[in-house]
Amino acid sequence: MPPILLVPIPPLQPETLATLARGIVERFQIAVLTDGSKSIDPAPAYDASRNQYDSSLLLSILLRLHSAQNGKILAVTEVDLYIPVLTFVFGEAQLDGKAAIVSVRRLDERFYGLPEKSSLLEDRLLKEAIHELGHTFGLLHCRRFECVMHASTAVEEIDLKSSSFCPECARLLDQKNRMGENG
Amino acid sequence: MASNNQHRTSLLVVDDEFVVRDSLSKWFRQDGYRVETAEDAASALRLMDKGPWDIVLLDIKMPGMGGLELQKRIKEIDPSATIIMITAFASVESAVQALKEGAFDYVTKPVDPDHLSHLVQNALRQKSLSKENIKLREQMSHLLTPDEIVGDSPEMKRVIELASSVAQTDTTVMIRGESGTGKELIARIIHANSPRKFFPIIAVNCGAVPEGLLESELFGHEKGAFTGAQYRRKGKFELADGGTIFLDEVGTISARMQVQLLRVIESKHFTRVGGSESIKSDFRVICATNRDLEQAVKEGSFREDLYYRLNVFTVSLPPLRERRSDIPALTQHFIRKYAQAMNKTVSGIDPSALDLLVRYPWPGNVRELENVIERAMVLATPPAIKPCDLPFQVVQAQPAANGDSLEAVERAHIIAILNRTNWNITRSAGILGIDRVTLYNKIAKYGLKRP
Ligand SMILES: [Zn+2]
Ligand SMILES: [Zn+2]
Image (cartoon, rainbow over all chains, first blue to last red):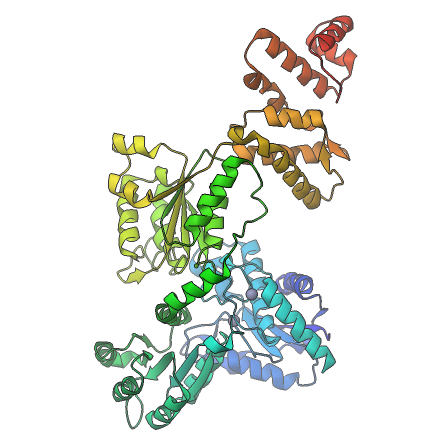
């Protein structure tokens, strides 16, 4: 399997990316490259009236820039993301595609006016990153609430799930990976 | 799961804005739904042939035929279609009109993803709950139990039987038992074997949450509900939607919370702290207590109406001392668990140490046993746990199990000291304040053997 490329989109704390990289290696058993030089400027995706960034636009900029990249690409950022019809998204992924993006903004307890909890933030980010990467491998939402592929639209729901794939999703992921290798 | 193509949920998005169609269809495809889009009423009506559509998301304001008119046409073709209106902020009045004409609900652009996702789930649940239940029930011919449930004693078998018989109903369950008997585990078994198993089980320890915080913990709060509440947070009842709420130590809640609890259990509706919107949640209640609730009702500290609401079906967990035959299996289970966690090669327990465990009264039940084993695993040298690895209290408490006669106490105390010194006779005699010969005589008298 080609490695997963982790791309920071500023602003982002470097430790956030390093911790996340370790977690992803563990779950996917695929090498992870973090490459700050592959970063992009989020400014073109900024919507001043919403004070948010269009995640679909960021994804397409990322794809255009890294069309030669073989493996999956995951962008990580602290800016607040949205897709036009929704008030916000934690992240977005191309289903069965190449790129995904996650934001730590709404995973941070401070966003909700609560004291900072860095371990909780790391947990949530890992879950959302694995979730979006799961989509790029073609996985759909899972009904099991403990499964990382369960859809979460609130942090409280992210906290309910684990960072692992349930046996059914793990089997599907394995199947898709093997198909990917043969094709 | 989405792999089940026959029951694949279908969703039609009708909106004149490309970006709305595009992002909503991408969003719902990740749920495994079959999604099609239409840019106006005419193409939406053409797509009715490719239905039936479980859910139609309908923009209320479109050029040409508007959403309200289209809703009527769709309902004529398929009365069972669930319609959710999408409105801009300005057209809430027409959304209300749509509701009068049979729309399921409406959302305002831009849509809160959490609201949209739960709205769609609720609509689907309403549509297929009965079908789904039958399907799930058929799949659950045998009871799934986590491996923490260890024990072959008749008492434990009876508990598992009760749990399994009540799991597939939607009945409120009260689990009673001393602390440490594993009440939450039983709640999880009931949930995992119920038709609600794909939805979460949300545990709340009512005794551990300070009274002032319990209300927002249970019902959530709105932004600005109190100092520090800068954003809306969901409460436990909202998170339990579709699933089960497990109220541990329910006997500890205040009179004021008892009233609120009764209300939410009866109506399945509540409002967040500082909010006015009525939130609906479909949950099952499992509660647990180690208190004498009947006495509390008699004394007036626990509401009688709430008591009857909660006490529909009772599962009583026996204390560990009443199912001592399970202690060896539980011990072995915890040894395996901690050997793995600590990466230690300790794989068993000496018979004399096990004997101590079996005879100890275990006021803290299974939880105490687990703590004792965890501690012993830290101290133990491979291959097995020895009496000296057990905490002194366990050994000392032994007289209680053997009777309070002076002889029994002396015997237990000698065993304790011998174990503590790893049967070093000179040191033990020193601690006991007797000479070695006297100690040898006592060892012979009580038939003590080195483990
Ligand atoms: Zn997702
Ligand atoms: Zn899954």
